[in-house]
Each structure stands twice: as structure tokens, then as C-alpha cells.
Length: 486
Ligand code: CA
Image (cartoon, helix red, strand yellow):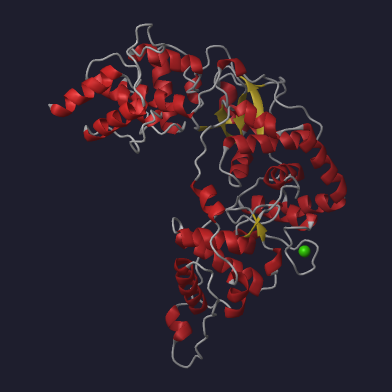
């Protein structure tokens, strides 16, 4: 989904309402049935008119709209589970999707070649993005942009941002680039097959076939040209490769895969070679590239060239850009990665990542505030742990790594046979309240020992020199009662 801050038109309220100008009346609306929403909408419409937006268009876009609870729910949802990279890739680079891309290339024929000629962007990369964003228009767009953007502006978490999107949406309609009944979007307001936000639409979307409409909903040529223009605008280097799968020499220092950039020539000097043994050309050798190990030291190794970073400007994720690049290769009939994914090493779910972070912190490796998400801080902490343990410092979390960290932290994983009896819901709730009073960070005292509670218990056990199990047991409750009394 494309997002960028939309610069407000410089028109000031003083100008629009100043002496000598006939004051434009803001539009009026019938009630949505939600007084708070009506209040925000009327106020927004007043400010939009003062900024020069057309009251008739505002009325067209916002009449009959009320906040959609399903959008707010989706906006507040947090992913519970981050899938392993091999599942992410294999679920997206599918035979069906590859066939659809080849079919679209045939359908567009010479038009696609003309678009590539105009923008200098590899058309197979454009098809790869198109496939991921909307499956070439097959993915249903279940919302409309006015509804989605008004709901998210009203919700208020990012009000200014979404009000600016609404202002851009008005301009799209005022300028006749799209009509109100065309504005199908995702729940987040990303529109059409390229999933453009309104500000990106205004600055980037292309009317390739010249019918006066920038139709990113149903016109294939407009869609392909719009995605191409986006990548060109974000710095695509025509004719340059996106990535190379590489082979690393024995004894390679995996800590070099830390996101830092070197010329391909420098990587070559460190013993890095293309996986198929072919030589880089002089123009390849001057590319500034980074080494990426998506599944750690035992999985594929990739040199990411600058164009890989341009794909990330579409969606800020290495996995996303990798899938786009692999789809592009598949559309050309080329094979995927040579190196197999090391699925046997296992991957950590959010609970396990939270535990890993907490334990690394307790061992003095700074993994940051434990949140169950594997970010750069956790990766640095894992690398430091691996370095101290004389292991390849690839920073990749595996089930084996968690086992080692547990051992170092003195955590017993399997409860002994005579383990003290677990607490019932009431007992857990009391323990949670006590831990909160003692200053431990847990959420609501809900009687359920979730990840945050178990981490708080581990910290408590460590401070009180108990076995670190993270389990809500009678002896922990007794110790917590004692601690509160002291
Ligand atoms: Ca058009």
C-alpha cells in the first residue's frame, strides 16, 4: 500500500475567507446516526472548503457515510504470528500466480514494451508488484475510499494523515480523473489494482491510453504505467539487476550481513561469488549492494542491489521485495533460488520471540523492550550472543538458538514431575494484581497467563532467586504475597 504525507495546499483560511471574496458555504449533510462522527465530518468539511475544496464534491463523497467498525477493528489488529520466510515466499510465488503474470504480459503485448520504454522499469518487476498488490485485479476491493478514509480520520489515531488523504481524494474527483462511484479501495483506503493512496494517485497515477481518466481500477495499461511511474519516481535504475544469489566462502564473517553496503567488487574481494559461478560485468561491480541472509547462515545468501531497495519503496519489507523479484524471474521462465530454505531449523512464534528477548535482556544483551517482534535490536542482541558462543553470527532466530539462550539463562523448559501445582484463573488473577503492584509490566489482570504475564513471572523469579520457569504456580503466588507484605 502506498503512503506518503500529502502536502497541504498553501491556500490559507484567511485567503479563502478574506474580504472581497464571496464566502463559499460548506456543504450540509443529513445525520449519519452517530453524533460524534457528524461533528467531525461537518468540521472537516468546513476546513476543506476553507482550503479551496469544492463543497459539491465533498457532499458527493461524504453523504451517506458512517464509520465502519470493521475498518477500525482491522486497523487495531496486530499480527499474532509472523510466518517463516519460506512460507511467506512459497505461499506467494505460486504456479497459478506465475501463469496469471505470463497471461497478463501476453494480453498487454506491445503496450507493456512501450511502457517499459517510457519509464525504464523492468516490466516483469511491474507485473510482480501488480500480482502481489491485487492479483491483477482479481483480489476483491471490499471498501470505498471515502468510507475507509473518513472512518480512519474519524477514529483519530492518524487523523491529520487521513484528512489529508480525503483532501487529495476530493481533488481527484474535482479534476475529473476519477468519479466517486469508481473509488473502490482496501479497508485502509488503498485504491485500485496498484493500491495507491490518494496523494500518490494525484502525483503518480498515469492515463496511459489517453481517455482523460487515470483508471487504476479497470484499465490494464493505466495500471501498468502507474506502477512503472511509481518505481521510476522512486529512483529505479534502468537496466540494473535487482539481486544475485551468491555463494559465501568457508569461514565467512556472517556479521557482514548487517545491512551495510559495499560495492559488488568489494564483496567479490571477500570471496563472495555468484551461485552459478558466472562473472560480474564491470557495470555490476560498481553497484553498492548489501548481503541479505533471509533465513540465516544455512539458507540462501543474496546480494541486494540498489533496485531491490526501490521495490522496498513500494512496500517496506525485504520479503515483499524478494517475492516481487522471484515472480519477475518466474515470468521470464527463469528458476527460483538454488539454495534450499533451511526449514528444519524451525522458526519462533511471537511468544517465543518475546521469551527470547526477555532472556537476552536478562543475560545482558540489549534486545530492547520485549514485544515479540523480531526487529533490528533483537537481531543485534542475537548476533552478540552468537559471537560470545563462537557461532556464526547471522542474527537469525531459531528454535535451537532459543534452547541455548534458555540454558545460558538457567531456565528449565520442562517442568519437573513434582512441579508445584498450577494456579486456577482466580489464582492467576491474584498473582497478576500482585505483580502489577510490585511494578512488573503486565496487561490487564485477566486471570490468563499470557506471554506478558509469563515474562513478568520470569523476572520475578529471577529477582527472588527461584527457578525461572515463567509458570503461574502456587509457590510463585506465595512468594509474591510475601514480597507485597515486605
Ligand atoms: Ca486512461
